[in-house]
Length: 134
Image (cartoon, rainbow, N blue to C red; front, side, top):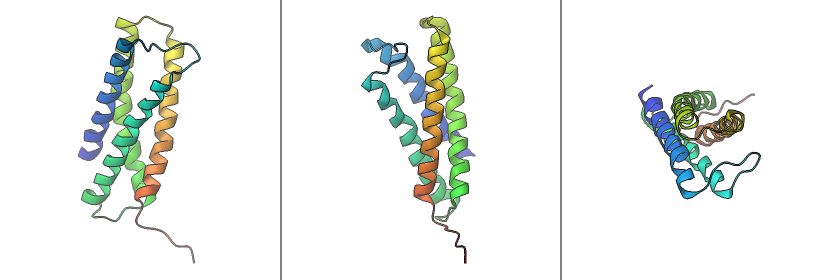
């Protein structure tokens, strides 16, 4: 669980910083549109999941990890990171940028879907125990 907390906090804190820093460069979210720079935010969970699941496989599983183990670890990392990022988003919307919450919540839901897809991919990448059906 320590691994999930460490990399989940990494994802959550960097995502929270992204939420606060990007508007400083004049890149405010527009309703229904995403600027190309906003797509770079997908690198944050990708990097966190990659190193988190790899660390879990190498240290906790001693190099042997099944797909379901990696997927569960990825979900734990995303859960912790998501809680921190959503808390930062709520503070941002409530205190700094009083915009329509529905657009911002749609972006957070999109980030959740991207994170789940990345967790599937990373778990498949680091799977070392393959179950054979004979």
